[in-house]
Image (cartoon, rainbow, N blue to C red):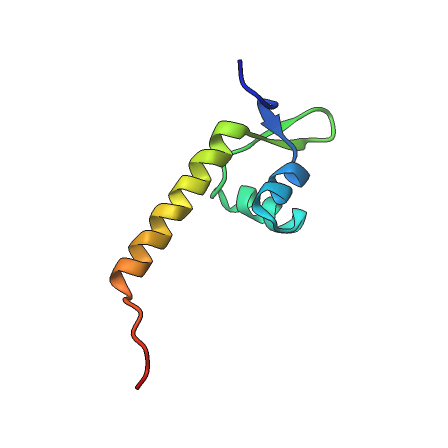
Length: 75
């Protein structure tokens, strides 16, 4: 069984990513982070596995950026 809840609120996502709830909402609305809308008020929920997959994609993108933009120190 999983160690945490299967679904996270946007506030939970924001806490994990150390960002604001508004930024977590923007990730969902842009389609960068898959989520579902539940209940009569349409509250967003993100599956924990989707959040982990998003984090891995961001690591991959960062690695690609670093590889294609090597750091050089100014003389």
